[in-house]
Image (tube, rainbow, N blue to C red; front, side, top):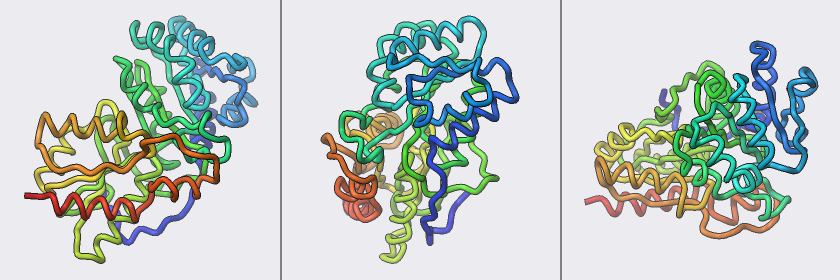
Length: 320
């Protein structure tokens, strides 16, 4: 489904908003859908579900570990529970429970982290989650999803509800650029080629998919043809699409709003080491960020199209 490389950035709803509204839709369709939250319903947007189904939303207070344990119990009782909190809280405070009560027994719990990455903005570094994808991927049996926009998030939430097994979905606080129209289709574990290209592949997830599309347009003006892959499923990753990209374009750039030492880039490098090795450049974070607006932070820490363009030039120059 290639997108025109003359991509224009238009803002849509935040992915956390798409999560909340889709969750309420699922609640109307399936009485077994239940929700746990950790005193953040208005932020995680589970408030939409709670207003319609107050008896099916369990307010766990500021106790993420307990929330995960309660969610695991509800799953074992035959319900389809979603538990939600800021990614920084649910994945760190709840990790022991995610490991022992969800991943190990392969329980049917859906975990949604909101306010992920540094684009949470002014709330500051203590609430920024730059390691959530790494933690989620470290849990056996988990599927890990990182949607780019509203349409992709709606799919991810509905897919998670239908899938039997633990799932982590990464969502964000700010409005997200529109990448897909409402007719787009997705398949878990299959990357989406959102722009065709032959000289380099830009591999991105979440908010960075739109930046990669902007970068592809800038590279086209320089005569560099850039393919763009949206990796909406971090685990299991689409090794076939990555191997094809490496074989056909010869170089890659990975862009993510996450620590480069443990995120998507590492998984891409592992996949290529097993299939078709190629030069790879990495755009991401290597430190804690400051407090500031989302746009200021994304600019300051180099998570924008210009940095992707520079990395693409380096990757192309390294091709044999």
